[in-house]
Length: 509
Image (cartoon, rainbow, N blue to C red):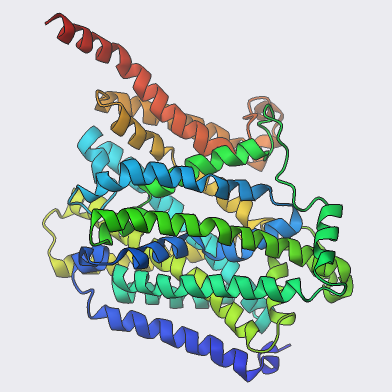
């Protein structure tokens, strides 16, 4: 059925006006981003509120906007524990990492690793970062396609290709300044869209708002999960909290998406303010997304006839919120929410493409191939990389079509592709006597741990009688934890005897 004919003209206009406005903003900033410094660092001239809203919008991708409600609808609030770790990670990021990057001239976050441990460490971290961004964009593109699938009835693969190409082209237009300004606008839009949807469902229950809480309590939907401190095999409160601490330390400490934003701020003080604004704003907003998931559960439990039978099957939870947006909201609001989902996706994809292109240029092309590449050549590399990474993101999105939970899949894959690179930064920052050899040993051992824990999650490993007994006993959310600790502790311990000997010799002198 062609559902576009049933979409009210007001909703259609809202979507088209938003899309046109976003592309127009990208074209406006295209004229101001024609050299590499402007494209990558916005000439280090942006105010704290703008950078902070961009950090927030980078966090609130369609992974948050759709996957969190889907996860809360299917399970409970256990994943909210991830958000509780953000203030601690922001404190560490503000105290240690913002000054580190602001004091350096390089745009790349990974140049610091070369300074400490040589080119191998820099390339290792940069490569794993690029892999993570491909998975991130794929997750976002897949989730962005869901409401359009409900609205238009098009094949999800077609929607991924159409929206993926359009957002990739947009990201190539305006550079980091265009991305950040659009992020800020989209951040306000995301908050407004989430609040509006939550309020409409709150007052749309057949027996009033109290029915939400009674049904949620009856089915344990507000649970934060098991608090069993000794269970490391399932997604308990403590396992998710550990994942959140390490993942958010990686985000605020070494993720090029965030580091690049610190650099665009006018002053060090404004960079600190931006980090606190963007990170702390996410905590209450993520709570709204979890509440929306609980509202959806109560809404369709109280009125099961409103949800098609196909939507009630296992693995369909991520599609329930998009279905509600298309069928359960008033005229005009549907268009606004679809535009908000599109906003979340465009913000994330544009950020990932810009930062990935920056890393390819600074950490690989100029470092290993053409150190003295001119402005025109550098811009060609930035544009080509943006397009290539957009294509790879679309491929990952298509591969994710049949996943059961986009949120859990993203968390698992991001843990794997983190490569434990946070451990390298911690080793370089806190173990001042650590050498290249120590770092290389840590990387090798950390990669071995990550590979073993990752392969243990694969079906071929679990189904093999010979391999099953060698499986990791830990939950996949802990891959980033053990990978990071392996790199840091092995590197630290290998260099400890030499450090103590040197310290002892200095004391005798």
